[in-house]
Image (cartoon, rainbow, N blue to C red; front, top):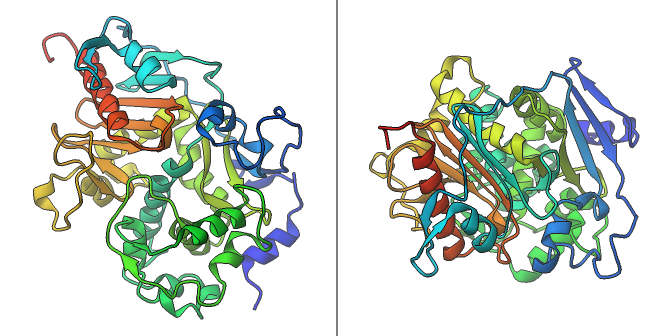
Amino acid sequence: MKYWLTVLSLMVPLALPLHAAEECVIESVARNTTSLGPWIDQDNWLAPENLRVGLQSAGSFMPLLRIKPTTAAQILHPASRPLDLDKIKARDPLDQQQRDVGFLLATRLYADGVVVLSNGRISGERYWNGLAARDQRLLLAGTRPLLSLMGAMAVAQGRLAPDRSIIRHIPALGAQTGLRKLSIRRLLEGESHFDWSSQDIRDWLAAGGWHSGAIAGGVRAWLNQPGRWERDLSPAPVLGGVGPEGDLLVWAIAESYRMPLAQVFCEEVLRRLRPETSALWLTDTQGTELSSGLALSLRDLARLGQWLIDARNNSRGSRIPSWFIETLTASAGLRTAKSSELAGLRKGSELRYGFVHLGGAQNRVAIIGPYGNSLYVDFDRRLVIAVYAAYPKDHTAAMRATLEQVWDALGSAAQPMGKR
């Protein structure tokens, strides 16, 4: 049986724009073979010492899709009272001393950029180490919460049935009996994962083209190898956890809309942000979008946070289902599922659909990607803080604690006088 994805890949040549209702243009871009230097290669481009180059030069190592809505960009106007990052004080979690926020960002988080939106206006913006406002930065595991968001939108539109097995939505996987126990709901929540060996993960990454030794057929051929899913499920969610389950979700969303994921993302998410810059999405050698492959400019990442705020305040006019945002923000007492604490964050912080529900003050969530790349959303204060960084570890308690201090200090400083 020939599936629409196969037909589409044969019909659409590389570098040919795709149009959908004159609103999205998607261009396939082959890997740029120009060398970035003698010391950066396919196997070390995401090593800690190369992060600043690697995260902004993904097209030098992998093919990608350039995604551009034809809608006009929304101008982000400056706030009437801009923030001075060097005058806002916060506690340094490493030595408990008072430092300014600019110091914590640049020195503790190895930040390359920060954008602060207050009521939809830029109240703070700064870049370091060569990052510019229009540069797209690879989100890696920070892509996963957005996949859950897109999946929730598909559920709300009746395209995905949350309690059905994943194989009911991906006919090509019908012979994978090990997937019968994995429901769409379980996949969206990300609160369980299969028990993969380190060799499994290396092979999966190779199938996607993340490092040398690529496996023929791409990631979907790897996902559908006989016996691939004959293994146990582990119930423990992991912050920033990436794995083959994310590529299953990519596949399910694409099947549910009967179009490639990049087209779904553009029509359902990106064009609604009215972005300044095209998005990029890394693919395997077959042109299939990868579950950790989205790259956005920092301003457009901040727009995503503002979109979530606007969706909560106008749920009837939003594509984002109200139950999704309410689940992210609900207090722990309203949830039956228990999640392990996240070291470095306040008590009550827990993973929900790949986002982090933050303990402490109500109605605050975050995307915490690897290396300090993050998006903070305070629904009550209408505050968004987007950070791109190159912290030399993917996740640590110290990194999360520093982010929380920065969020708290900027949140307080952005409040009108008398409300702090």
